[in-house]
Length: 293
Ligand SMILES: Nc1ncnc2c1ncn2[C@@H]1O[C@H](COP(=O)(O)OP(=O)(O)OP(=O)(O)O)[C@@H](O)[C@H]1O
Image (cartoon, rainbow, N blue to C red; front, side):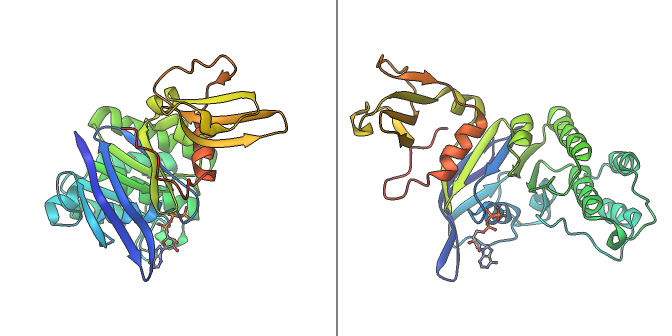
């Protein structure tokens, strides 16, 4: 089942496209990592999915409907924006009451348990919380809403390492126990490695690659060998990045087939290698790589 479907989706601010030509099918019940350099369009995509941003082109469907199209659709989607907005004058307890009032699926026991575990004083106004505590409050509201899809924009950036690990564990519990789907942007590769099984890599407002992490890792290889022109590679080896020294060529390719040329030394990639290769090679001037589904 698809939780988010986009076709030709784009958003233009004045004369500049923040996102363009975006085609996606994100699976339900999984955690999708949204990755890309600063300004690549990640927050824009999440805003479009949350119904906070209107598309300039194309279509997007989230949980089977147009984002923000009515109360039933809004109840299915949780969104924790980048700067974790909370109401400065409302106390922690009042935030929970508001959450209960606004959300039909509200899980009050989960909310109270998380707040107690984190050690937030229910009587404290949110404006008096630290940045990390505010983020914890916003994330608690997002999880306790029990949405079908939770959209998280750099959710753990201000959390300390222990809080970060605990939050990611809570998130995984909700995925396993309640079939929650998650799309989260992050620059923290270790966190992405820990929790994401799908990826979307955005570069220069476009989807560079998307797919299941395991499949992406299985279909990318680093080839090292005597210096040569990569135009001579077989057509089914799509070049992602290439570097040369005087004598040696290193090329990162995507291929579904085994690499048979014995003059290459063939190595595997980890997630960091893969992300850095795509993020530092926007692939301008050539058509984008075929998307792996
Ligand atoms: N409200 C807006 N008005 C004008 N331009 C905008 C607006 N929001 C985003 N942009 C532009 O759209 C582009 C994409 O921004 P976006 O915030 O989606 O990137 P991002 O990938 O989330 O970046 P970061 O990793 O830095 O958070 C940027 O060039 C940004 O300046």
